[in-house]
Every structure is written in C-alpha cells, then in structure tokens.
Length: 506
Image (cartoon, rainbow, N blue to C red):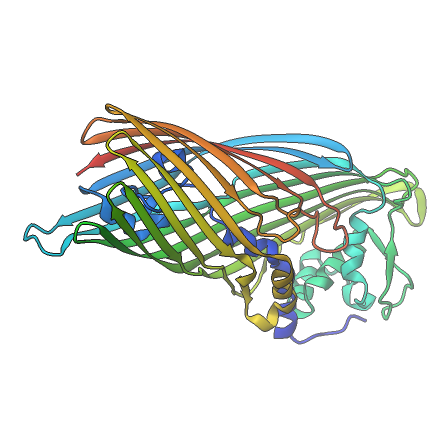
C-alpha cells in the first residue's frame, strides 16, 4: 500500500538542491565578451578609455568621455563549433544565430559656465552578458555504465510501495503526487522502476534496494544531446561626470534579466542483446528565468598621453525560478516472455515548478591602463580579478552541499585583455587579445579561455560604422548527469562572432 505524505518544505528544498549546483552558479557568474563592434574588436580592453557604450559597462566613468550625445545599435552573428569526444568517439556540431546584442543612448551636458564639473552624462545601455545558444552532440560506447546507474542512485533508499504505481493511476498522477509529497528522488525512482530500467531486489512494498535491468557487461551505446538557448541580459542606467580636465567618475545601476532553456536527451542501447533493457530515451527540459540587480563604480584619470582606470563590479543578486519536465521511453524484454519486446512511454506532462531561489555571484575589480599616440591610435590593457568561491546559493540551509562544492572547487580567476587601434583618416583598424583563467581549481571541468579579435571602422562624422570579428577557444568536460551516470564528455568549443554596429551622433 502506498503511504500518504503531507507536503513538507524540507523535502521541497531537497528537490531544489538537486536542480541547482556550482555549474549553474558559474553560468550566471560569467560574463562573455559582448557589446559594440569597437569594444569587441579590441577584446574589451576599454577600462581606461571610455567613449563607448560597452566601455561604460566595464567602467562607468567611460560615459563622461563622450563629447556629444550618441546612439549605438549592434547586431551579432554568434557561432559555436563544438568538437566532442566520448569514450574515444568524436563528433561535431556547428550552429549559428543572429541577435540584437546591444543598444544604447547617452546624453552629454556640458557646463558652459566654466565650473569644475565640466560635463555630466546620462546613459542607458542594454547588452547581453551572455548568449546561451549552443548545441552539443556526443556519441560513443560507455564501457561499464548506463542510464540504470542514474535511476539507481535515486531509487535506492526509496520504498517500493512509495514509487510503484497504483492500478488505474495515470503517469501524471503518480509523478505529480511524488513531486509534491516526497520529492525529486522519488520521481526518478518511479521513472526508472515503471520504465523497467531497474528492478527491486525483493518484490515487497518495504523494499528499498534495486538492481539494474540492463546488462552493461559489454557496455552501452550512448547518443547524448544538449541544446541550450536564451540570454543573460543587462540593463545599465549610468551617470558620469568630468571633474576639471583630467578626472572622470561614474556610477552604474544594473538590472539583469535571465532566460535559460536546456534540453538534454540521452539515448541508450546496451551492447549485450540479451539485456533486459533493450533501449532507453530519457529527456530533461529545464527552464530557468528570473531577475537580478548589481551596481558598478569607476574612475578614469587622464595624464597627458596616459589613461588610468579603476572600477568595482558588485556581486549580482539574482532571484531565479526553475521549471523541469521529464520523459522516458524504453524497450524491454517481457518478464513473462523473454522473447517478446515491449514498449513503455512515460511522459507525465507535469512541470516541476520549484520555489524561488537566489544566487549571489562574486564581485570583481578591474584595473586599466591606456596610452594614446596623439590622433593616430592607442593601446590599452585591462586586468580583472573575480573570486568565484565567493558565490553563494540561498537560502543557505537549503544548499549546504552545493555551497560546500563552491568553496572547495572554485577559485579566484584573473582576466587579461589587450587592445589597440590605429587611425588612417576616417578609417580605424583594431585588434585585441584576451585570456580568462578557469573558475575551477582543477582547470578541467572548464579550462582557460583564450581569444583574439579584429575589426575596422569608418567615421562619416555624425554617423559611423564598425565591424568586428572575435574568436575564443575553451575546453569543457561536463558530466552527463550529476548523479549515477557521471561520466564526462570532452568538448573543445570554438566561439566565433561577427558584430556590426552603427552609431549616430545626436
């Protein structure tokens, strides 16, 4: 007889902790190179320069460098090329998409009375912190583990009488009841047991141990697909000022908008044709959405041909919601007639809507230097430091394990950016290089990022056009699942983008 449980906040919190981990924290703590074409062409080395919308997203004082009111709009073509290896088998996915990456306006008010505060600027900039569009495909033969290991990791400890389905009860009813009254672990046990992926050791309601219905003695063939989309967008409200002739100050208040979608599918066929489980297709669709807030302060000091910049980016305080839906299809041998292959489809059509949780991302410090070669060009250097181990998931008591992983596995990471620009009449030629240290101590879950950029611009006076190409390369080694089937796929990601910007002087 299935027991009746009263809805328990503690159990609900356990379900949430399964949905969030340090990988999610790293995702929302990372800001990719985005923004105007000029900014991207110089690899974002703009902390001491200003006069660009994406520059004041790094150093708020950069808005006060504008001489006139301006509007800039930027369109980007994002391209992800993923070379993937899984147990010695390689595959590739190459995907592209267009997106309106940046739009901003700044109003400049000059002091005609000749006071110490010679200029005040007010700006609004909308820009992607990150674009999540990506497609990963891995295929290969896992030598010893499979989807049954995933379901066993959740089912063991769950009473058979709790996860087994009543006669006449629909998949939706059972799945929803377990999610609301017992938790995520019980839902996974139900899928594995009712999908004939795992078997109870004893056919008794009190049984709490299970075994695999799949024979992995010769391994299992896996096709693994991860498709992601969405964005992390930042709305920046800026005020800047110029004091006397050489000091620029600025403040940003940022509002963040998160929309992340992930579809993960594992297709498995055991190599041993005598296996009880003949085929499995397990899908998980995650939708994360929410908002955040942060602030920045910065200054730029002008010393003849030298520019010095410094800025502080506060932590971002996110409030996020997760929604998860799952489905499982299996082919298995009929226990009563082993020569007969049966089909079981479990699609509960139930969305697990978890209660709101919070992520506090780490703050960062940026120091910048630039040298101006008169009207001919410039060279610029930025250094930033962000300690990812300072990130937190909250409520703290609900995420003790995840926060412990953050403390033990993440580290302080440095970012170096170098950029240059050379002007030939109305033309500007640009280039840049950047290096971003891995947020992980082991440098293997996510490796260091290295990239370069090129660009060109033409200034008509009141109108200018800029084009940039930037390319970065980074190794990633994510696990298939967080529990049970924890084998990793090896990804070498090459991200290349073309950005076009148009600027109007008002």
